[in-house]
Length: 116
Length: 114
Image (spheres, rainbow over the protein chains, first blue to last red):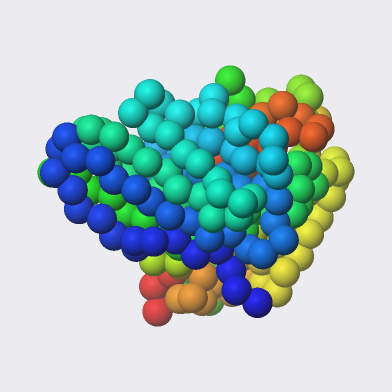
């Protein structure tokens, strides 16, 4: 079946511009996660959605970052007024339920964001 | 803050060689450990989810062991092939049982030379 998809695969933007990154999770997966990997760093948790519950935004690095998930499916991560330190690979993942300790997460191919 | 350490950071091996690398983590409040493989230009792929001390999992030529008392897991690759070249990540749920946030190590980048 279809896996997690993300778009765009690459995005180059000028400092100060806003960007939107999109994630389509696996159908039926209620949990959706956003991560990013900056150069030389591990994967960093950003935000988590579970069903219709309020998202856990505890990993968002600043108020320039926001995310929404419409209809319990597609998610959009928005970065306003991008800065060079926002350059990273942004990964989306989904899973069947909340107990990610029991099952793995399914990742999309990522969006490589470069802020010039 | 959960500290997940992976070593070595990178590794070059010849095709056919066997290799292994390590994931270290705090042994207290352990719930589960995940191994992922991340090939360049592809999505990270789940390899194993391990929960029991002494557990050993195997998938083809790749296997993993877990020691929760001393806080480490080994990933072994037998007879490395060029297609094994990837970054191998380990991750643990931050808050133990029922937690949804994973803390990832920085990964071990494996390059298999034909």
